[in-house]
Image (cartoon, rainbow, N blue to C red; front, side):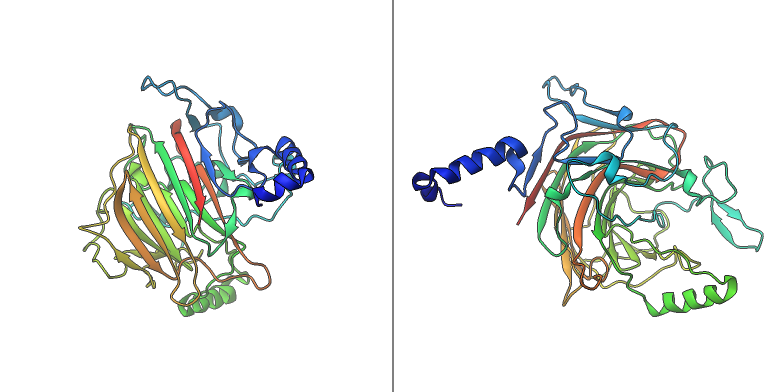
Amino acid sequence: MHFEILRFRPIYALVLAFLLAIGGPNVWASNLDEEFSEGKLVRGHWCACQLDEKLLSFPRDEDGSGDLIARITVDKTVAGEKDCNYDAVCKPYEDPEQSQGERLGPSFMQVPRMDITADGSTRKKNPYCPYSDPTDDRCLQRQEMRLTRTYQYAFEQRVDYTIRFRMPKEIGNETDSLRWVIAQWKQEPAKQVVAPVVKQDSARKGKQDGKREKWEPSPFLAQRFDDGILHITVQDGDCRCIVASEKKPAIWTHGWENGKPPPDCRYTYPSALEDRQCVSSLILEFNGEPKLTSARGVWTEMRYEVQPGRKGSGGSVTVIQDGNFVVKVTGKIGYDDVPDNPPKQKFKMGHYRDIMATSDSMDIDRVTVVAK
């Protein structure tokens, strides 16, 4: 709006003042600078539909600055999948919308302990899951808050996200590769990119048991903390690749190569193919190696320059930690579009993990979102 108009048309100034009064400063804003200074969850910024708010607090940082931080805790009281009930939690802040679930998928850390099933095959074991199937939804823990619609953007738009956060110094389990997502970017809605090998496996499995596996899109970009190791994955359809890590996973036989695809990519498709190697279109660019520093017991700032997409040559994600360039990922990022329903990129953070016995907190000092 041109302020010259406001000078000569007082009615516009009145309308602007009214809108700001009823909607706050974010009526037209597309950017966010959240420092949690209000000591509460700002409903115009965050939806808590997948968060137990009794385990959300806003203590003062012990560094002596007096600044408030957000602390998201997950403990044994949190168990089982948690659907996002917009009607109950997010109204009147925004209208209800569809939300696709996401699978935790494979881990890239150490080889986890395995169970041998009745048919002789193996599957990962979660020592804290009391059920015979370690993938039972009741053996998941979810404590996440997501940005509201004001901060959801067209999927292929360039958006920069910065998160200053800290994870626990002590981790209760560092050997079982229990999956732990602490920030994720979703494409919604999304349509599966069916690779030929996936199509063959789906047809074979359908003939065997007469049913089709349920497909849910994984986050196209995720910040992870399996075994207490900070690492990042990017998704090319059902092919998930680790693109940066605090440590080189013990199971690797070779490392990253500049200008080449990631060395370790795994299928996330829910079938016998899950966790097997796949080939992606992604290319890595970095200096030295795409290595992260630890977030255990220390503050770190992660900046993500995100412009996903699959059309043409695809999109890109650039990762910067504490002001230092880590890696740029280019290629086909995400999933196909659902016809006549353009997707959005949606961000949420907190804990989404395999069930664990420990109480753990993610401290968040600041979140900024800038749409380009």
